[in-house]
Each structure stands twice: as structure tokens, then as C-alpha cells.
Amino acid sequence: MIDVLYFAWVRERIGLPKEQVETSAATVADLIEELKAREERYAAAFADLSALRVALDQDLAEFDAPLAGVREVAFFPPMTGG
Amino acid sequence: MIDVLYFAWVRERIGLPKEQVETSAATVADLIEELKAREERYAAAFADLSALRVALDQDLAEFDAPLAGVREVAFFPPMTGG
Amino acid sequence: MAVRVQQEPFALGAEVEAFAAGRQDAGAVVTFTGIVRDLVSGDLSRMVIEHYPGMTEAALDKIEAQARARWDLKDCLIIHRYGEMAAGDMIMMVATASPHRADAFDAAEFLMDYLKSRAPFWKKEITAQGETWVESKAQDEDALARW
Amino acid sequence: MAVRVQQEPFALGAEVEAFAAGRQDAGAVVTFTGIVRDLVSGDLSRMVIEHYPGMTEAALDKIEAQARARWDLKDCLIIHRYGEMAAGDMIMMVATASPHRADAFDAAEFLMDYLKSRAPFWKKEITAQGETWVESKAQDEDALARW
Image 1 (cartoon, one colour):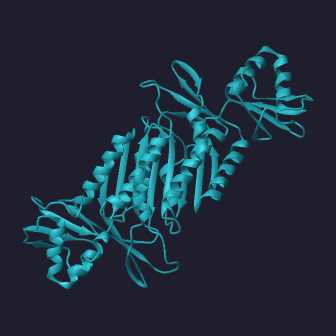
Image 2 (tube, rainbow over the protein chains, first blue to last red; image 1 turned 180 degrees about the vertical axis):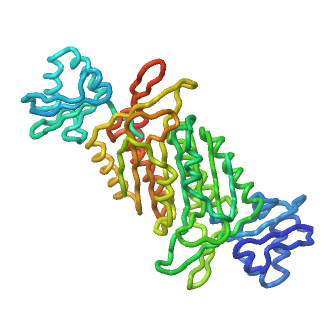
Image 3 (cartoon, chains in turn orange, red, purple, yellow; image 1 turned 135 degrees about the vertical axis):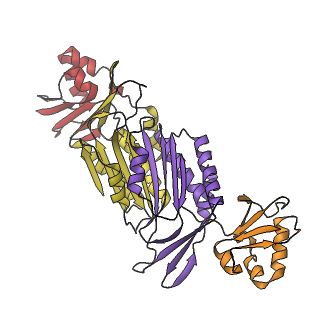
């Protein structure tokens, strides 16, 4: 069981800020494939990975990063602070 | 007749902030030679021109600049504002 | 050294005054303040900033630690707001204090460059025409390359 | 746009607050503040700043006009004090406001670099050991080359 968080337009497109996902995905990319297979809104949100960023346990990561031991995955667009 | 101003250690070395000088010097360098010939304190103040700056009518200038039409000459060390 | 992530406004003048007051260890203090611009002239617009509680503080702490490791900083402050703001409202500020003018400037620019692209904030502009998520700029990502 | 040369202290917080308040035309405000450092640790020291009345204002106006010609500045402020100051006292400040963060930073650094070497101010440090005119640094002159 893993917490999956969505922010900004990713959150709006998927329609929720957070959910718990039962998964045995080995990497972030695998998890994304599982989510895309669920419903159209996920497929839409994850259509262009170059427009997305991912954080594992609140640290920026790559899409090929392993999920072993990870408790929180967050997906969001490039940040626009400052 | 020209107003000659001194600032910072130039003022302290020469012993006054301002004086009127009767001169027919063609350039700043000529004026400096006239002043140096006057007294030891002038010779001391103008000993090293690389440590000095000059302004003509409140605008930075070079030592070979002409004095024609100039009403105010100021000598001072490199500036240390900020 | 302080990092604050908050919804409520901050008092820029009081913050800067307190940061710089009586500072005898550092002759140079630089501040940057980000303000909501009225992008759509004459239009009543708002901005909403979303953030990632927990990660935001961790990211800002990390950016601040990098700045302190890299430059001679006697003090450093980062304040960033989230929530709803109107045009003219202050979004965030950074302040740096150093014995060296170049260090104070460079560290403040570094903090801003990293904060723009590495701290989990997202801006949304709301105007009469609708809502738009602000897109990140390639030049903001490129700005990181100089450090 | 303002240049102020004055003996009396200025209120940094109030100045920054007034400069940035409600500014909808420029999302980026940068300030630099120069403070008297206690160079001789534990020693009661003072600083005296001499200037060239008339030329000082003209030089600062010129530097400010150059900055405005070069960057997209919506506003610009220079305050510089002269006379006697104690460690911890504020000597001067500059502030810049621009729609672009890089412009606000660059213009503030430009103002500082030129102000250091081209505005007629001279600093003298007074300690128990005596009085010393602060010497200009080669690096301050070199800093002008980048603009």
C-alpha cells in the first residue's frame, strides 16, 4: 500500500489530491502504467511525462526510480515558486 | 582664478578643504606641478598620482585634461562608497 | 537562519528591518521580494498558490543549506506564502547577510533560482477569462546551470 | 526614481515597505543595504564618511540613469549617508523594481558596483588604534569591467 499524491493540474485532471494504491510496481514508470490502465482521467493526466515531475517520500526522483520501501509518491507539473 | 578642492587624506595632507588658485596652467598635470612647487605638503599630497583622482566641474577627468573654462578642480583618493 | 512557509501575509518592512538591524558581522544585506503582478491590465485578478506541505519545508531547508555551504553567509531568511493573493500582494521574500557584497548577491540569486524550479509551489492565475496554471519557463530551468 | 544623500539615518524597513507596497507593475524587488561592520572585534569603532556635495548627487543621478537605460526598471531608489556612524548603523541602500527577476538583480548589482568606485564618498575608520582611510580595492575597480 502506497500513498499517491497529486498537485496542481494533475490533481485537477485526476480529480483527487491523494489516494492509497495497492501496487507491486517495481518503478515509478511501472506505477504510472498501472494507473493509466485504470481510467481515462489517469491516462490523460499521465499522457506526457515530460510535463510531469515525481517525488518519492518528498524528494525529487526520476521516473525509472525503484519503489521498494517508498511510502509516498507525488506527481505534479514543473514547479513555479518564487 | 580657479577653485581647488581637496577630499579625504588629500585634504588632511594639504591641510585645507578648498582654496582659490591663480593659475595659467593648461592642464591638470600642469596645475599639479605648480602646486607641488609651492610647499612640501603639496609635494607630499601629489607624490603618487596613481593614488589620486581628479574631477573637473564635478565630473571625473584625466590628468592630461585641459583646464580652459574650468571653474572647479577637485583632488581626492579613489572613492570608497557603498 | 530561518525558513517559513505560511498562508498569512508577512510584513516586509518589519522583516527586513529585523534581519538587518544592528548587524555588525555582515556589512552586506540583500533582499528579494516577489509580488503578484497584475498581468491582465485593468482586470481584477487573483493568484492561488498550491504547495506540498512537508516537502516544501524540506526543499527550502535543503536549498538554504546549499547556499550556506557555498557562500560566507552570516544569516539567511526565506519566507514563502501559499493560498490566495491579489495583485500587489507579496508572495515571498529571501534575505541574505554576508561580509561580502558579492556573496550576499550571489546567494540571494541562487536561492531564487532554486526556489523557482525546485521548491514544490504551483501558481494559478484567476481572471475574468478563467483559470490558468502558470507554466514553468525553460529559462528558469536554464538558470540553474550557472551554479 | 529617487536619489537621496543625507546625514541623518534612514528607516530601512519603512523605505523597503514603501518601495514595494502595492506594486502591481513589477513582480521583482531587490534591495541592497550596506551596514558598518565592527572590523576590530570588541573595539569601540566608528566610521566617518566624507563626500563631495554637488558632485555626489550628480554622480548618483548619472549612475541611476544608466541603470534605467539598460534594464527594464519600474522604479529605483538610492539612499547614501555621510557623516559619523557606529558599527551596526546602516550606511546606504539601493532598491530596484522590475517585471523581471534578473533585471532587478543585475541593476542592483550594477548600481552597487558603480556607487563603490564612481560616487565621491570616502570612508574613514576610527578605532582606539587610530584613524584610517579605507583603501579602495582593485576588485571593486575590476567589478566595473563586467558591465
